Image (cartoon, rainbow, N blue to C red; front, side, top):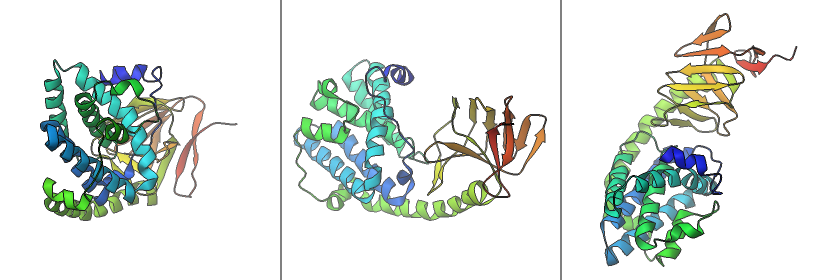
Length: 304
């Protein structure tokens, strides 16, 4: 149902173009996002004043994160409209009752914190949580929804929420001290991992190919390399007018999705290029040329 919603999303005027939310792989981005999720879960489990207080906390945590990453606010918003609404639709359409939709959302919120990365997956979880909570407090909320809507603002208006407490004070109610310790340790380990990935996908020899085409890949475990894009692992299959590619140990997708990068070196067998953990078969009319650096290569259309 999630994917079926994507099919009609353009007709509904709710199709928003996005890029990965790289800031959600940072210590502060992850910390405040998880606190927001925990407060949304508390709101879904509660009623009356308890629900109102938890909603205030969720929105305070949301504002705290966005104050640290103001340039990411618009993309966060778009991501929730694009993927969050699809996840919300898949959840409520397949639920037999509102209670079942809430239970499913709580399961998703709990499972989300165990994911290795929130770069792409964060909007799925936030979108379904805000959507199902809005169903509880304002069942007609979808009627006025637009591609420019912000789900946090929609909830603020629908529930008439007025924030009165600082986010740092509210964090204690959601095991904030413990969470920050865990995220600080993760951040130390991630710094080392990013250095390894930068050497493999940025500093070392690489093959650069166009970012267009379609295919399938798993967003779980993706890691952002600040300033360069996001590395997706697991099985990554893609095809375009340039040919087809399959990778199993990582593909770097630029922040604007204009290019994909594979680690070099590679060998050539006919029209097939074979590297460490990947193969690429070139379509007719496409060739490999020198890249931006002497050690790099690039897939381009043969203009001879």
